[in-house]
Image 1 (cartoon, rainbow, N blue to C red):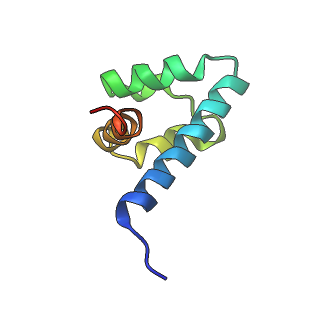
Image 2 (image 1 turned 45 degrees about the horizontal axis):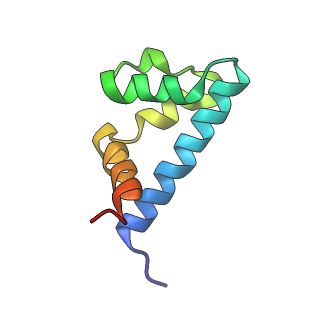
Amino acid sequence: MVFKIDELENYMITEVLSHVNNALNEKGYNGINQIVGYLMSGDLGYISSYKDSRKKIQKLDREKIIEALLKYYLKDVK
């Protein structure tokens, strides 16, 4: 079986962002706003430690997250 690094990395990013968003929403935060705040500032204070969300998102490179998001949304734009 052959794995493509980009696909595996994108899968990991998707899983972590989904987990963090759900955990933040469970705690009563607006998950999207909190993740955006973290991505823009780098301040982990935006991410709760609930359900190890902070640990999980901290393992990912912020630039890679932003790159994956841009690639996803701009893939069909020419």
